[in-house]
Image (cartoon, rainbow, N blue to C red):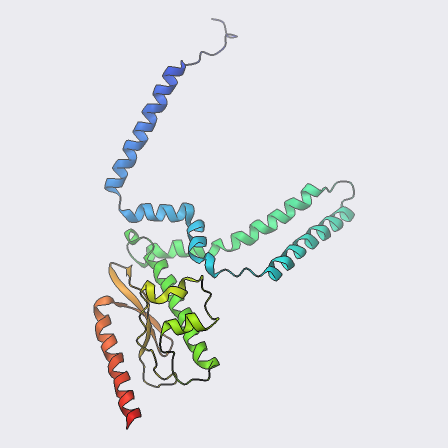
Length: 264
C-alpha cells in the first residue's frame, strides 16, 4: 500500500446527491417540528436570534436623533482614542501601535453594548418562571404595554399642567396634534388607531375618587386577553377584557355625576 497516494475524493455527482439528501432530511425534520412544537417556541427562537432588530424596529421612532449629541459623542470618542494612544505610547514606547488603541476602543464599545443585554437576559430568565413557557413573550408584552400606557398618561398630565388646566384633555388626539410631548413618528402618536381607550377624558386631575384614566390595547397574557388599566392614582394593572365594559360604565357614571353637580 502506498501511503503517499493522494486521498480519494468522491465524485461531484455523489456529493451533490448527498447534499440534496441532507437538505431534504432537514426540511422534513423542520416540517415535523412545525407540527409538533407550539408556535411560541418558534416565536421565542426568532426573538432570541433577531430580537435586537425587532426591538429597533419597534422603538426606533422613539430614539432621539440630536445632531449636537451625536457630534459631541464623536468628538469625545476621537479624544478618548488619542488620549489612550498617547498615554500608552509613553508607558510602552515602541511597543504600542494604533491597532492596539483601536482594539481598546472597540472593547469599550462592546462592553457598553453588552451592558444593555443584561436587562434582556434577566427578562428571558424570569419570563418562563412567571407562567407556562408556551406563552412566549407575554411577560415582555405586558411590560411594553405598561410602559406605553405610563408614557401616554405622563403626556396627558403634562398637557394639563402646562396649560394650567384642572382637567385632563378632551381626547388623545389633542395631546398628539397640538403638543410637542409625542413625536409624530412615535407609536403613541397613533394611540387611538392602535386601540387605546381613554375613559378619563375631561375628568378633573385632582379628583380624589379613583377612576380608570386610560386603557392599553388588548393583548394576550397568561392564557387570556387583557388590557393594562391606568388608574388616576398612577397604579397600573392588567384586567381581562370581559371586565372592561363594567369599568367603562363606572367611569361614565362618575363623569355624568360630576357634570350634574357642576350644572347645579
